[in-house]
Image (cartoon, rainbow, N blue to C red; front, side):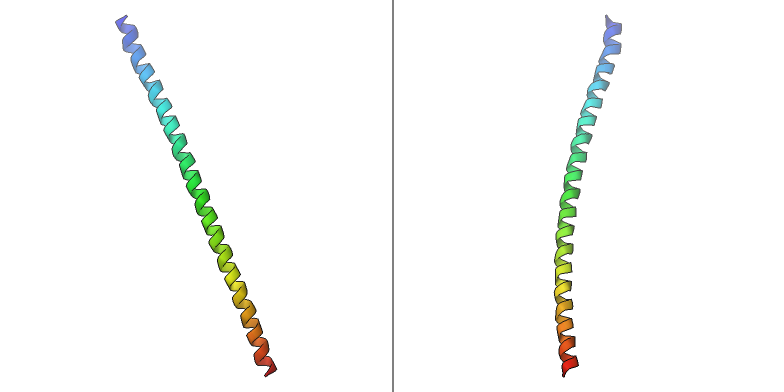
Length: 71
């Protein structure tokens, strides 16, 4: 009986620890993936905003250039 306990307890403990490690790793990876998706959204939004402002600036500069050529 003692031999079964001496062998079985470490095996069960290792199984439990492996399960806990796998679950913890899965949760951490899911959290990291969510953070990366949020960061990607933020960067996309900022890039779109900057591109919009650059297009406005280009339009204004084109109009100004046309005015200076007319004068």
